[in-house]
Image (cartoon, rainbow, N blue to C red; front, top):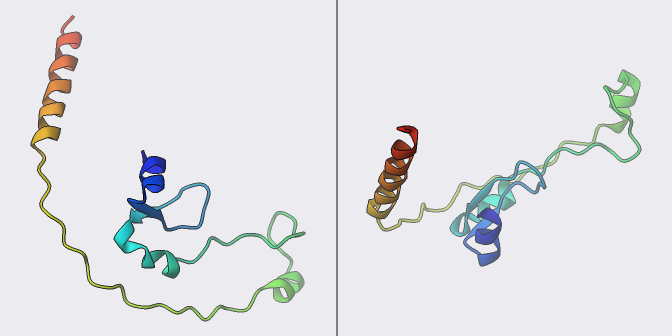
Length: 101
């Protein structure tokens, strides 16, 4: 469903990732600019912990992050859960009927 919501423009991806992605409502799109992209290894670097001499040479300088306070929280109409409750009751009724056998 998330891919469909994303293509319909209802939500935006916040995390700059391909796995373990985090989504937010379209109104919270500025959050994407604040979220730091995941740390990725430097090209050509091998696996494991670098030696002390290497780590001092290859450590990138700290970025100057521009962290702004979030804008006002949007207000939404109250959600009517009656249809969802009916669907859950119907599913529970069907489950009880088949478990009784």
